[in-house]
Length: 478
Ligand code: SF4
Ligand code: SF4
Image (cartoon, rainbow, N blue to C red):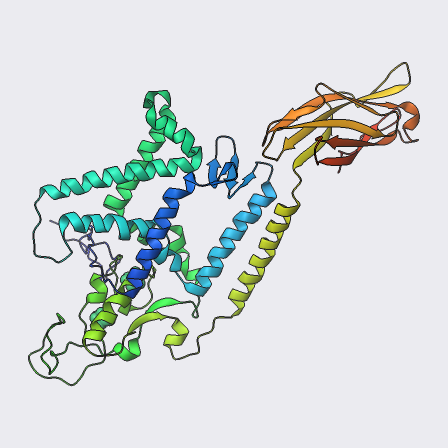
């Protein structure tokens, strides 16, 4: 039998030395940070469930309609042609992530990431309810484990439906729920797959998402600097760590290991291990900042509790920065933060400007296929054109397209006025007629074309058309 090669140190907090999975059952430390995180978590869960039902005007607050390539966010619908706007939004999101991480470290991971929120405040509490608190000697009936999984399944089905509502809307979803899955097999399979993934994640994979799968976690080393806020162990105060006797007053309320002989007072860490058993990613914060640390502050709550019981100051583990821990000055404003903030301000400015100044209709007038023009016997030059109109408003519109100069110019479309549904594009082909005498010596004529919707919208754009002795021109510009 070949002996197993064993690593000199732990390579992964969820891996035993023999390569098997080290299952974590963190013991919750219900301190002030835990209570605050729980309030944030419940708020976020309520928001996630409620958002698909909330309407702003006659639109859902959020609808990511991938099928029709339309995204509605808080009353504003983004169309596929909103490339710059969507790009600005995306860049803004990334910059916000960099900015917040540079300032507050992994605050997103510990406080707001759905993985942490649902794992630590929904699925693990359910597990504790049916299987008992970690470390508890009271055994629960074996059947309760099956009940736990039944609750997991029901919860995952509910969350998968809610997730689906973001992409199809609640009205559609409620209709599907009432009908046979055979009438809409694709969404049903999507819902089943989402449920399966949730069960796999929260029932089996768990903290491994943060430790080995999440790309954001992997990027921490480049996003943090020595002034970023992180959960830190005060080595100067805590070391050399050591175990203590119970105090002279005989207080035995702290389950601390006891040494037989009185010893000189150790530094503040009494090596009770409570910060380790409470850690949802199974690490020991006393080993320094590690990639696996999600900044959840459970070790702070655990250690503060121990310190209080020992009548020692709290904060042996605390939110701080590497520089502050080394005795330096805590610096919030620094080059990295200033650059992120400046870039974020620019991108936000661009986004808001584009949003505010966006036209309610996209207009494109293009030259038609085939020869650029024909000259009729009556001296009129006829060119083919294609008029593309995208209605960005929330109501159906009828756009009248007409030439306003030169006086001889006429637009003849297959349909005019052009009726366009909200969010839709209509492409009309037609003819542009201009008297030969209106072309210059190069065979070029600039025609002013007006588009009106009969309400408040009116816009005139220039279109360069070609005539006899002309050559290839340019596309229309507003
Ligand atoms: S909880 Fe505090 S005292 Fe206990 S081992 Fe961790 S750092 Fe040391
Ligand atoms: S080390 Fe502390 S802050 Fe980091 S994940 Fe573990 S318990 Fe949370």
